[in-house]
Length: 387
Image: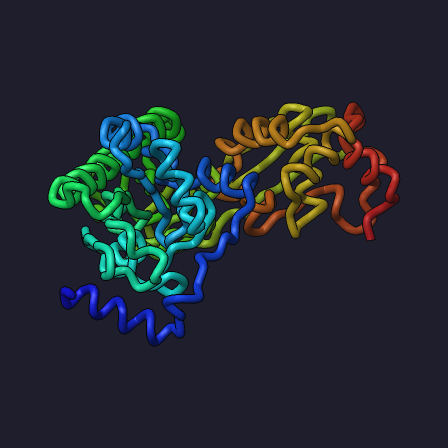
């Protein structure tokens, strides 16, 4: 055995795995694995892997297997006969083939050592797997280096193992290249979608960054380093060089808008005026905005719920029982250029110091947005004067 295989066997023994009495567990059921595959980063490259390696599994007895980083098998592709044989040992989608559950295999050990590896016949730790030759390579995030999963070719002992090693190594690089292409395309769409928001903030330094800290776009160029780790929440932040900025969440926290870079200062109070007004007025610092009726309703409801509301809850408050989360999210996206980072998400809420005329002690709430029929506004009107 090679040193890598010997070390893997030792890890399996330390985990207490019994070579002759262990079956890979299946923590996923059919519906769960389908959803998990759609949401997993490797899911977008599976069609490319299947298409590029289709000839290797056609009438060859080889199986193409793709896993996630923990060793859950996501896809098992090949001819019917080898698939049936694999299924008898629970080598099927949803099963967990990690070193701490099955010991030494192509999938589990490639994930453990994070490099391509072959496990042939008796090198497998479990006795039932010793009729297989498994060759696997890890798939990494092309930017962060995070381990995402593995691609594996499993065959009988008489297959061309040198060719299998070259194939899985190339397939893993192909998957990473495809992930990079998709990332660059998404970043281009983000720049096109959000750069106008930056341009409307005259005189403001701004940037779009990914959740891993990668700076995707900045204006003016050079005001930020290439990576800005630690930006994972909305609101005021202190940059590594001591400058102050504010952060807005984009796409449910997957990307962020960073604005500022100046000296610290007290954020202006957000003031809402809606009593006796068909269209509410919002004042932030020296800027005033006359809101649409719908946006006035949304802001009034959020002011009345400082702890925040989910999209579903906010939709019911604004539209009633038939309200849809997607509709209110669309309105919030149109409202965000006005509120900026003051509009928090997950749950939706208003950040920073806020004042509202209808929340002042003794305020006549019955006069709040008189043209509104939103359930949340009606409830506020009927609640009587503010305490």
